[in-house]
View 1: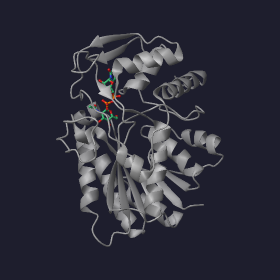
View 2: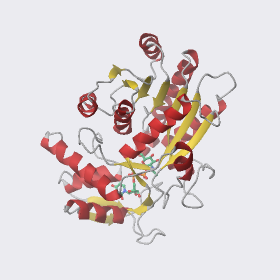
View 3: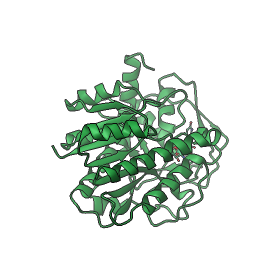
View 4: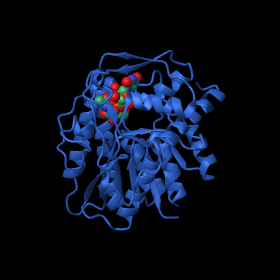
Length: 344
Ligand code: UD1
């Protein structure tokens, strides 16, 4: 065993895939999740893939005394990966206080406990949302952080600043901030995947649910952008590839290889794909039609953003491996599995 890692939000979409990769790499995992946007059955899926059942604590990261008891009970924790956060852009505009409290109080609690319990490495989930509409694509880590367009985006910016400001001499831990582009897909086993509550806000779950007939039609938000086909461009990154980067980040810190107390890496493929291209590729890979209509632009959408990923390639030794085709096939396999289980 390489050491014990606390994974907050470990039953969520990216969290669960990361727990699998951590266990595959020999880490022992303790999941903390309040199940606000996930399901305890995910732990079974993780066990079916890896043969190892991670410890699961049903706990909210805003519950400082509960978290502290967990640190005491679990003994030495080498690293923390903090996924737990609320992430719906629209909801964050409606309920800003909920977002600031959920996303920032939990971070402060975790940082206090990491200092107290001598944790060595901290991985924080950030987002390419911090770049806003970038001046140049692909956007690299030195690009300016733009004013956030919603409270959710602002929590990511503020969290990054808190982590930077708190890295004063004497802190036991180094931090790595990972800026995700658009994570999609599912584990190839279809034992775990993305399970949004209610109507999906993100593109691919809406695509798979439409292909399944759960939604009658996908709305494509705008075809009049300054892009080759007029629809928005994003960098869609396979969730298993993304998960593997977290293991590399932890290894780096726990092996004492950090070049600075806080390092920042973009995690994407380096390629931009438009909404219409994604739909066409999905149809080609699955042979299933996705009925869609073009509607007006969505408020606050970025026209085009894709990542420069050379820093993660060179320093973390990580590179996205999976093709868009294979990734879309895993998302469809997962959707079929949900149907088979009567979950969708
Ligand atoms: C959004 C957030 C981002 C957040 C991420 C995770 C914005 C501007 N960004 O990313 O900060 O980290 O979600 O929750 O909201 N689309 C459609 N029809 C749909 C859904 C989406 O055409 O039904 C299009 C969007 O206009 C966009 C692309 O698909 O061009 C991707 O959308 P989405 O999956 O919501 O991700 P982002 O907007 O990139």
